[in-house]
Image 1 (cartoon, rainbow, N blue to C red):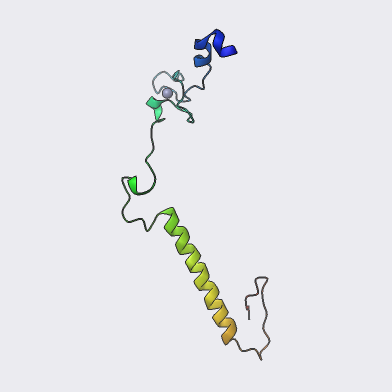
Image 2 (cartoon, rainbow, N blue to C red; image 1 turned 90 degrees about the vertical axis):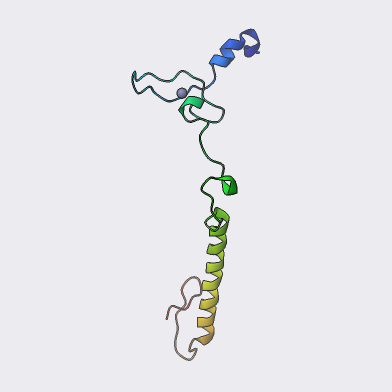
Length: 105
Ligand SMILES: [Zn+2]
């Protein structure tokens, strides 16, 4: 294998940090962190854990999971109101349905 002949060549072939120096304008020569585009000095270690371990986590009602649950519940409530409107509709009068079978008029 290529790496067996010269281990340093394999190490040097790893992706490099894309950060540039503010003073010199030269690129950072450090290897980028695994799965990141920058080295540990340029934000590769950054980021906070998601969920209850995040420092700004308060009560979870704004978490992704709860926002999606609220959306689903609101959609169900909307459908229930539309069904109620269908039941209450004056069926003797002419009515128009849209593509989703909702009563338009
Ligand atoms: Zn860097």
